[in-house]
Image 1 (tube, rainbow, N blue to C red):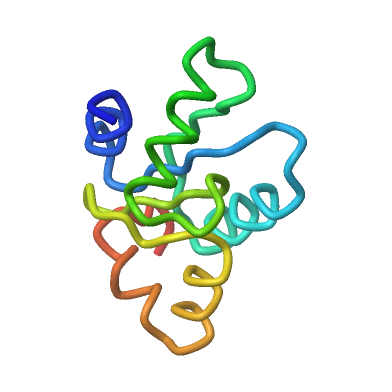
Image 2: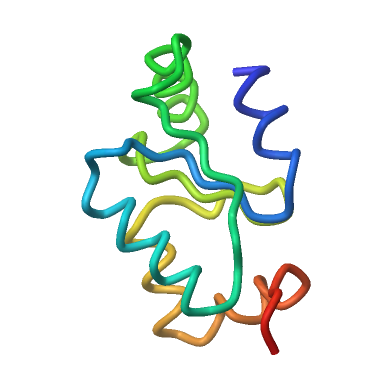
Length: 101
């Protein structure tokens, strides 16, 4: 769990993903369209990926990927991110990390 917490704090927006996950891809595209470039950690390409998946589940993720952290805090998975976006709550959270105006 320490590695997940450390990685989640390395950048303003962090996404734990799997390279073959279509929901992860959708979240990446959403962030791209919103002008945010998250730090992406592909768990299926990390030797400690399985352990990190378990740690994400213990931290409260319903599904281990995608797991989104903003400002070092766990936002959640696709459902939480999309609900925030549709409700107007995601953009204010991302504002400090946007590269496009």
